[in-house]
Length: 396
Image 1 (cartoon, one colour):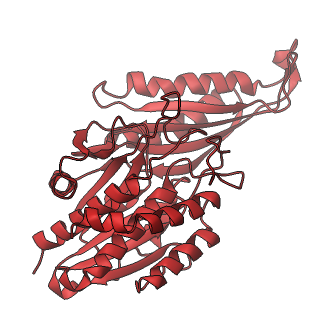
Image 2: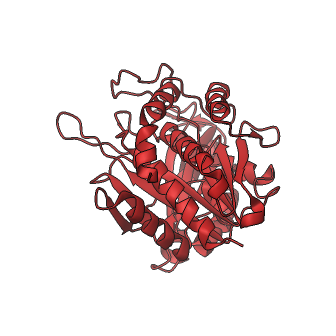
Image 3: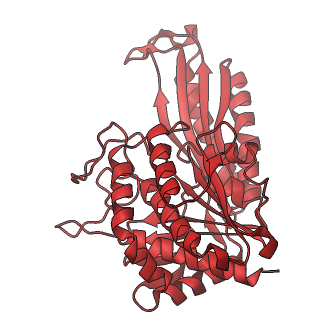
């Protein structure tokens, strides 16, 4: 029986698990209800596991390391702090929601592991798995590295999936090499001296300083980076606390992000941005603080691994679904921390649109996003087949 047929056999169980996670989302590093359910399902299928250090990450292995190399399969589990508006019968019961599909990711990995467990004696190597918290903070992957995910055993390659509800057709989408961009998330505090709006010379205007910092930051892009290796800087939040039409506030707070597909460009922005904040602040007599909230690297696939995943998808799915290479997306993903340390890796997308009655489909992080649950068949089938094919290719 093919992995596609096996995944179909597990669909009802997968759907029930996914919907239970979806109704009870959790955010950040602590996901007690989510990991309780995942551990329950692993127990039911005799898959051994443990926690990664003192984190809420769940790790374990299948197969036999004496037969070949070790492949890491990873899924994230956390939700985002947004209200859901899709009106599903299993919509979130909380003030957060699985609007990025991590409930689908965790369930897909679970199904892939169940199928691989059934074939454990046939595996030409070892599967290591990771259910990860806190991807949405862009710091969960970093914590996984610090907690030893690449040790005991050390994986030789990695694989992960992401749902793509705004795709055109059901299927598998793969980046041959560059996949997702880096993410430098930051906060800036500017302390001036409050004053009457009619008497700006009696204070130090942090709003004016903020405007100069924003202009200076964007000059990095236009004057310090080549046009073919660019980056973006967006200031998404500004708060002039205490200000008004005729009041210069004492402080201004800025939050923003910088993204790039190129490591050297991301590094330049990371170095230059705090310098610009500091020196523009000094130039106008304001005090500044610059804080890095997250600094995830770009996510890059290895071409050989991408080709293997594409061939595996074609093998297991046949002509029933669209399978193709795609261009990089300008989103970010903290699996990049792990992938950047592995000799081989592939992060691929499961296109899973489900139009509403008016034909609308919504992207991840939209309050009305809906995921086609058929992805719980094609995602795990592709992951399991690709895992087996990779192990066979690297058997001893």
